[in-house]
Length: 417
Ligand SMILES: *Cc1c(COP(=O)(O)O)cnc(C)c1O
Figure 1 (spheres, rainbow, N blue to C red):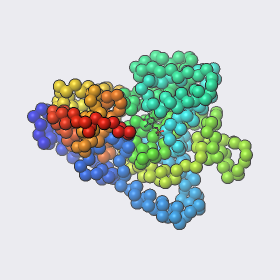
Figure 2: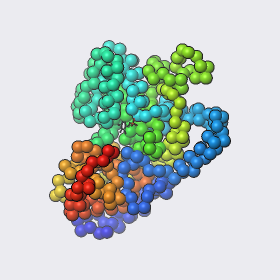
Figure 3: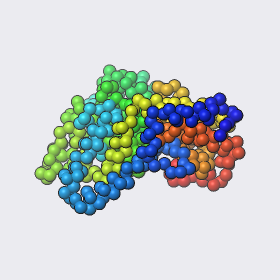
Figure 4: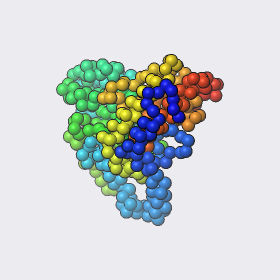
């Protein structure tokens, strides 16, 4: 395992794993033999309890309980109960988070609500390399409103100075999905409020990866993803946070019956529920929420500060090993090296990045490729260890040296990357 090019020894890496305060969490996840997984930021690994819990939910709650389980098994209150649990991970007091729908749909709800509150202001401020679905949802809403609203895009470094009195809403993803750049949530929220703007934070790449303090920074709205760092399973429901002070001011436009004050009085007229429940639309995906709850429960046992520290040490180690072992192959580091400017991922760029990632995946190193040229490695502190990183960089160095990626089979683009 020793590499002559590396200034840190394999023994030292093993020592880091042995002293890892989070090491017991690895046992709580299923990661297949022979896989080094660096894609938990795209689809989190399977918590071991999920299979049994879903089996029970299917057989007992659905099979035997049938419709009685809406109350008997707590299905009806699940979006709020699970929302409060996620609230603990993102610094939100109870009653401000609800689990529902997808991140995209939740963005639509809060963006519509925020624009409605901002009479006389027309600009939605975001970044050109925000995750595309966020930008698409904003474009769709602007078109629907048929009004004078405008989606204005500025690069990350320019955002704070671009907030002005015309800004209705600042709509940003806390950690950029492609570069790993992390915004200063507190400073941007403060600046926005000084200018009379509201802020929507997309926490897709931060909830469950690091401590987030929504109440503390006085965030207005936030949304986030269930299937990434929260390990809720493919297509897991998302969540939405609305600060208590904004909840009663407007009811979001997807006014479904589950967001009604009294869904079971079957009134013809819509009347929004009190509080965060009005951000529900239709009936929620109970089985998917059941799986998500397992992921969130594991996360709640972990110390978020310790997770953040481990994630930073892992990404520091990865960058250092790449620097030492993969020199001279034109790989560029895209992620900021400053700790306070990055999330829990490291991105490298290379014109042949797609083929390189396919060659890595063929050797069991699973990261992902993000167009046009990014190799992305996510570091999930609960089930990735330092030795995994050591091995992965060794394999990357070998692929670069042997040009194993330079193979037609690795260059054909798949539908999902
Ligand atoms: C992953 C991700 C989403 C996903 O949206 P879905 O509606 O759940 O598919 C949205 N925004 C960001 C920033 C993401 O990273």
